[in-house]
Image (cartoon, rainbow over all chains, first blue to last red; front, side, top):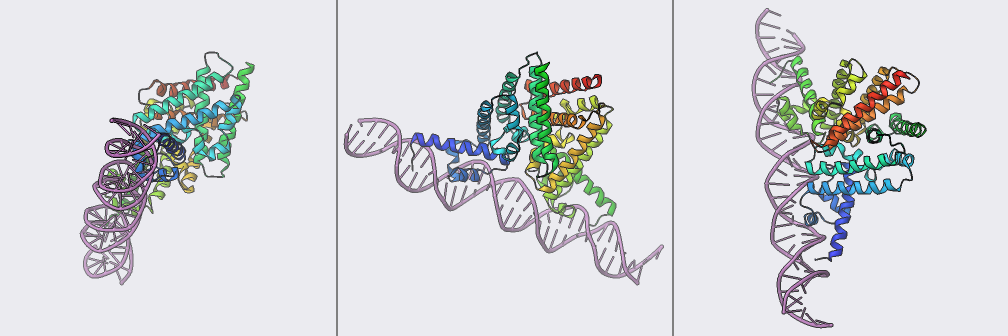
Length: 190
Length: 190
DNA sequence: TGTACATCAGTGAACGCGCGTTCACTGATGTAC
DNA sequence: TGTACATCAGTGAACGCGCGTTCACTGATGTAC
């Protein structure tokens, strides 16, 4: 049966939001179109009324994920709070609600250019935002921001790849957080 | 036809080596057992004479990848040389010959515990080795080593996820390298 | 050392299954008058 | 405002395909005597 235009948009949003979480949890290849649509409350056939292909969904859902996480970043009062949230056990255990870079970087490297472009835009925004939050603006702010982002992404991802409960899993998060916070203080003083 | 015991071992080695490269290039799910065996010069049916399942191959091939890369690390004269090699464009463009952490962390986070355990061992060794190479041993060596490893892995992975040729792709590698080298010098002086 | 037989790595057809995608159908919504 | 018809989002069966795995078969290797 046909559905109101507002409902169509709302349904598309629902699929997009579910996809952005599921992709981060299971990877692009780990989510079947059928499973996705079921999780969104539909049958699989309707998928192609909203998206050309699974590939084009990947790009759209990744963009949605970056949007989600950008909002989450904005909510943080300052850089230390942002770091604590990013490198938390909660974030590690709920990749569907956490950073797309940590969850989908490797997947994206094997995706077509369109997906990579979306990834790059989101990453650029993340770097820029962290750069702006750095109090010291000594020309090394960009370098410092990139140093923070690569460590955040690396630590979160590595922590997920290690067996649940292994000391190394928590060490990676905590040590990265402590190290980053120390650096921020040193820069403030210097 | 039956084959000599030496030949059997050699064939198994070949499959393992090909798998360790292919998995790093295309991910665990991106490599079909048939493709792997063809690449190794066999037909697919013989696979199960060597491995219980694709999953058990994943663990064995990951271990092989860590072994490869540990040898490569040993070849580096000092830490700066190791960093230059790790964060090179060549390493980024040939994931099959580069660090398994950067290529397979996300994949491993979705694999069974056995695979994660292998991942953790390889990562621990990498951290330990870099820690030993740090001249300053001020009790922060472990923290410093983890800071380096997370940055190396994060930068390499992010550089691969960005569109080929984008300025950000090279910037991530170069900035991470420059930043890490500066830190090493500062620690030497301090 | 030579012979007879058991073993088993590699082959390629076959299996069941899940995937992305297509399509005829339905019926409420949107539109033309 | 009311009516007649076209539209099209959602449904669920069906498709072709590639996957991991199994299996009967082959014949050189390994072993027992």
